[in-house]
Image 1: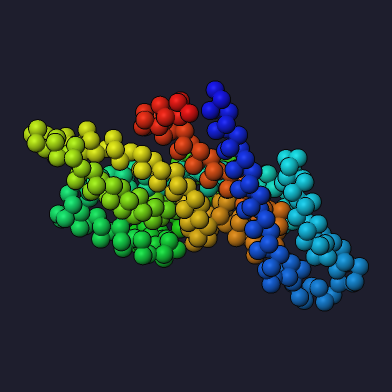
Image 2 (image 1 turned 180 degrees about the horizontal axis):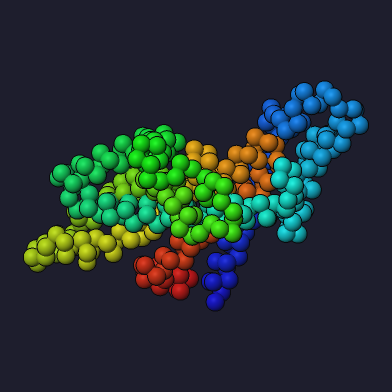
Length: 330
């Protein structure tokens, strides 16, 4: 019980420091941006026709004349009370904007996360078990090619093939154009999420497969695998009984660590497919100097990534009993 309380206390402290650090970094980067909020969102021509009183109201709305330290401390005090503020561009609470965009992004990010994990693990195990043979060479070549391919270029390629040339999938957006929100079905949302999710999953497979392959190669050269071969076990039996069990822990770490990569890749992918998700909202907030929205997206995504790493830590004990027994003794 004491160990669990200490574990929870350390994790909560780390999460608080993480959210403080990422929010401060995002705020400093936004403050150092050369973009003028008034010229960006209102326009130089419109500003030229406004009176000084109107310009002063706009400067007060966008916080141009407010000292940076005062702006950040004001936002931080509201955040501690559970208030993320209101979006300056959408004129809605940040929680509502993030909730709507996150709901759209979860469709493709969850699918990409599962597909990349399953395919990466399978390809890595096959490549490691067949080290130096044709399957290993093909899988390594594919992973190296995908690792060197930018996500936005791959998204454009898939868009041209499946949406433009073949015409079997929609060209973008999250729902059919001109369709009422009440008339949008689950099938419509899934169909529009296929290409973005496929792009994210393809780019995420390479890293997991290559790391899993290296671990699998080490396992296949271990003493207990040599003993299993001496007993006459087949390669398939060795992989299933010894390989998967020992490769599960690093694969689990890589799978949950890839959450941050999927979030980062979704920013570019959603821009290419005009998908109204969280990544596109982050780009809009950054270019539009919407500080409350950008900080809200930053802390929420950081919290989700931290939750993924925490879930991996909690699952370690279930995968490896040695970790569970060691934690119980401390």
